[in-house]
Image (cartoon, rainbow, N blue to C red; front, side, top):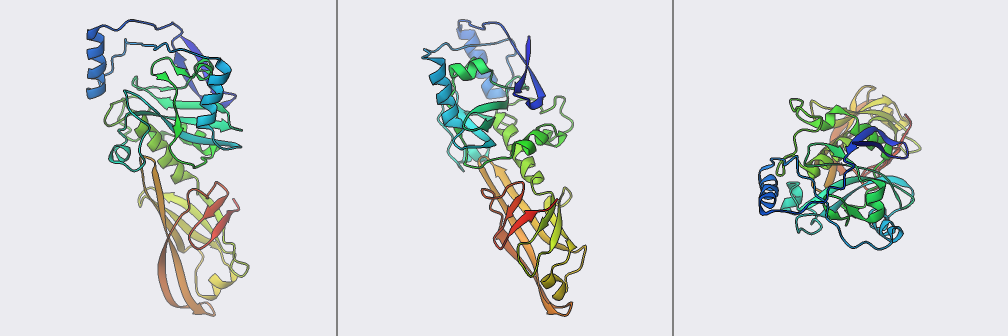
Length: 316
């Protein structure tokens, strides 16, 4: 067994065992039947290792093709991408199989840097995290699934530091009674798509934790945002008054903002916010209401929180 780190010191806590044998075999009808049984029932045929040998052009061209279809944007970021398996096609966003995380695709996490893959991690039928080797990326071929034909599931740029922290967090595991770290792989209920969905869900529960400042010149109040696992939402507590917030009667320690993750169903990600509004003067409130809005998850980052009414700046 050969051990290697994922890539260039990124995700360095994720080490995988990769078989060093050729793994080329011929398929008998019995093995084909076993593969079908594994797909339908989630029973892993652990002794079966398969490589599909396809015609290969220059490695440089293949690697450029893989990089160019996965890392579509400049800079350093993480993307989630899918490659068809079992005769399937690239997934359809918001379709029922997408919502159920049960499309005929393998979904994988890639770290991109200046339009090149520099790290990757996924979840396989052996109930293990794994990564594609440099050789597989250069050849454009997965030794077990065939040609690498990945496409990002959306255009979001996920922060690589937060993703790395999430991948090391036990909260991504879900059921703590499961024996293995990420649970036992089952085709219909705990597959590669379910794994990546849990990573994204925990990502959105983490990214906005901190202290944020409002952008208004006359009302630069600050709120401390935490994720409340009991209420399953973000809660923003007022920690510094702005001129206007104090004038209309807000109090330090008051919950002034909440946000709910509507669900990471397949490739769909939405977050709804509620902002507290008061009317009044001289520190006395005469009216109060919650106003509903949306978090712009495509524009928000680890340092910028973009909502319907304002763009908050992280100060801590």
